[in-house]
Length: 392
Ligand code: ATP
Ligand code: MG
Image (cartoon, rainbow, N blue to C red; front, side, top):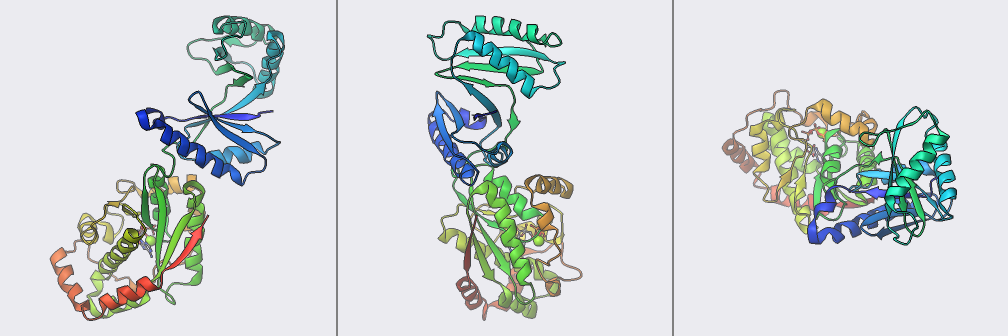
């Protein structure tokens, strides 16, 4: 029955003179999201509003699900369009609309008409009154409540007449592409996909880097990261996933450095390499899934030690989240089931029994000098293993 959607957007409405840039980006992202949907759609901007018109039959649930992946959308209103065939015909249409959308009618309502086409013979006030009366006559169990109605029934008179009353929540945020690009350090865990989602939600395009260590980490662990990137890309659009072979660096650190500092030193090299790729690909920052105190390598001291090797800003959107809160987001965005598959993301032989929780940066630096002989060469070799997988 619905033939269109009215798209509500919240925050991008307040961007002043740049508003049209955000709207255009939103239109672009909506078109992209609907491309793979059954049916043909026209996405257009009319008088400061964005509409999605279905030109053919379409699968309502699929279209809504797709629209719910587009950042920048705060609400999705399913719309019924009708030709203007006189007010009596419109009354019939509204009564039928209520019958279809609200099988249970013990509800209060308010009619909210907008006359965008000024030559329509009734003004909005009299549309409200006359239509309200018609609804009450058809459904005596309903009642009018102008302050806090259960159903706010919108009637917009344009060339055609638009009817809508439901708002399906969108994901919020800003359209991807309006906020530059950042490099996500993506592992196979629960946290980093959520971190990528959260930064993308602010309008940032995402690329990703994954460090794998064959044969210590398996092909299936790598496939899991590709799968996670694909799940995140439903929201972010295509992701360029860089897969870096990290084995030789890890083995070398394992050979030369105190074992309780392995994780910190390894993380410092991940950050350095990620930053190098980020700079080469015009990323303006790094993103990680770290959260204060979650593990030894994420204490304030450890974060200071890993942060120190970067000059780009490092965005850690989960920094103040509890694990349970992160799990909730991952369930909501559909990455949880994949994240908990049991393929090790980093091999256990490189994890110390008693890792430092308060690394001293000066001591870490001193121990890193144990690597001076070969590390530069190994980093360059690792960068040459960069395999770019375009995930969408
Ligand atoms: P996650 O659930 O994201 O794997 P985690 O709780 O396992 O996080 P760590 O393993 O300490 O935490 O990693 C902290 C962050 O470092 C991750 O969120 C991720 O951003 C990055 N990271 C860790 N391992 C890798 C890897 N192999 N490749 C790319 N990034 C990684
Ligand atoms: Mg991890």
